[in-house]
Amino acid sequence: MLICVICLSESALGKGIQTLTVEEGKTMTIKEETLFIGKSIVIEPDATLILDNTSILRWKGDSTEVLMGDNSTLFLNASRMNTSVIRGDSVRAVTFDNSDLIAEEIALHASEIRSVSSTISSINISGEGRLIELQNSTIEGAHTYLKSIFTRIEGSTIDSREIEFLSAEYLSIGKTTLLGNVTVGDLFETSDALIKMRDVYLDWSAFTLHSNLPLTPYNTFTARVTNPADTPMAGIEVLIYADGEQIGNASTDQDGKAEFNLPAATIHDGRGQVTFINYTAVVHFTNTTASANFTLVSPLTLTLREETAPPEPNETSTPTIANEPESSATTSKTPDVADVTPAVTLTRRVMGAFLTGSFIILGLTIGGVLGVIALIIKRRGRD
Image (cartoon, rainbow, N blue to C red; front, top):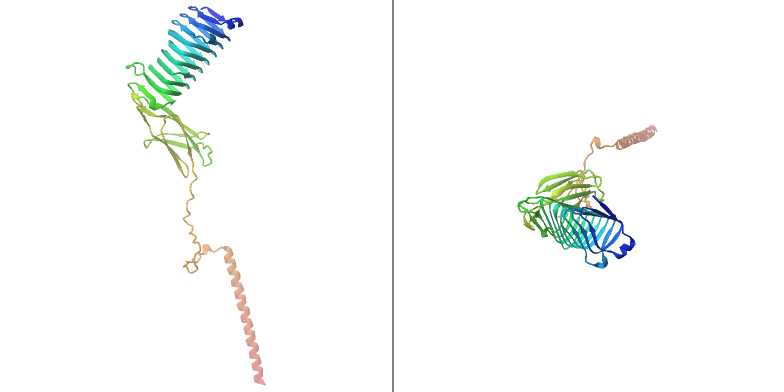
């Protein structure tokens, strides 16, 4: 295969090129250039055009077109292309890698159409083929129609009034935002393609399913568990219930989060035929329980916070009555031996000894006084 590398001079850039043609069966690589096209780029059958860190622009805003022949290939790497129309039938492959494509109309029927970390802007985008893949890419335009045998869209955004994905065998859409009226389904009435949707943001009231089989999209539910101070709590079990029945459980990680991949709804053939599933998340703390009801219209994160438990009443304590009148009845209790402290026992012993000594001294004093009185009386009797 003949490979031709074009590096344009400044003079050529200044004049621009009316028509760039990649001859049949040949490969042309344009690297690190800015190329102005006045009329068209023609990629003949079995030919390949590679743009590497290159910009292809319209000459003075003229209308230009990119025409691709049978089994031809177009590859953009870190490049930018601005044209009026890009079209081709029975194309082998079209790939955009970290690139930008601006066109008023894109109409490609290719075996493979791939876009990785790229932006595609067009009024009308129509892509048909065996494989269509969008990864971390953005599509902007009024109408976007993608039809293939296998379709995979991941981490992308499509902003169009009308968005249609039809697949014959496999269609997968994950972590993607779809802005507009969305239709997904089987390419043919009898194809019964496997359709998977996960973590997709869209307006479900503007969603249409064309399929003989019901669709069950899945979304991620994240439970964030915290203490009363809003500090994440690790190792806490989160329970998930659907219609009163437990269907799952998981423990929080070091960030206090537990993730669940849950079926969001059941969708039947037709427009807006969506029935969402009602869920409840429950966390049992030591003294309290936190719960939240939710539906998964889109991926969702909820915080379940532990609340401070109210103090439990002390059953052994006697309630205090404020300003109790002196005439109110009171009940006293004679303390048991176990209720008497050593200090009280010692005090009683001291008081007993003191009283005993006092009685002895008093008795001796009285006895002495009586004895003196008797002696005086006796002496007077003798006189």
